[in-house]
Image (cartoon, rainbow, N blue to C red; front, side, top):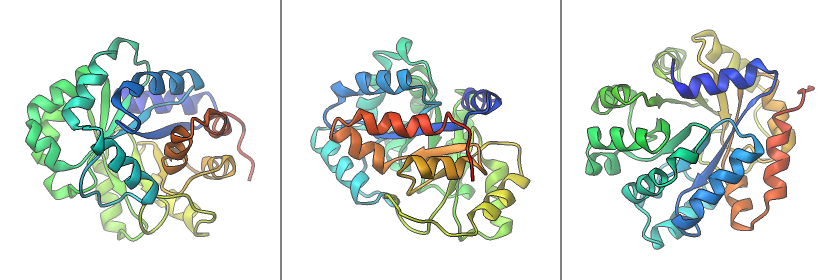
Length: 260
């Protein structure tokens, strides 16, 4: 079992729900990365998704896209992010999940990336532009480094596809809650609970909800029928505005009993 999956199961065993904030590495400068991760750990998050800026993202909404552009303007690269994380790896207490694209990993070198990422505290990787059928490009090296390869499951996936993705996903299953790109939403489809139940039927790997989750009520609502949530755009906005009160409210919503 992966360290990432262990962390999520330990959280849910206590009756809480997993909370995974997404941050864009390099937004505001890589020198902020250590303090941001430290503060999130202090708030009690389960894991942290570390976004790597990319020139041609396929899933990012306006908020995260702008954060990526700011990070790129600061000269942020995959290699620099890993080097920065490695500089304070001994202080990282929660699993990190890198959200990156395939080309930067190939340019880095697959085996070297896996080794360096593991040493820097990365315990999971999400690669949204790599189809399941191509996972062997990187999966063996990740396995060797004890890094989980996480799969995204969309609302439009066929039952057969959902089964294949869920059985292949490691660490957790990233269940996308909307059709489209990331970004805060005010409402979600009514059939999501049934969709999540079908995903969980295929596997004992935790299912986390992501895309559009932006309020404590969203965190509680999704927590009623899955293992936890990933919050991206709202976290990125709050960090840009140094609004830690909003982030704390979101995290605390995962630690109280969920009532539907």
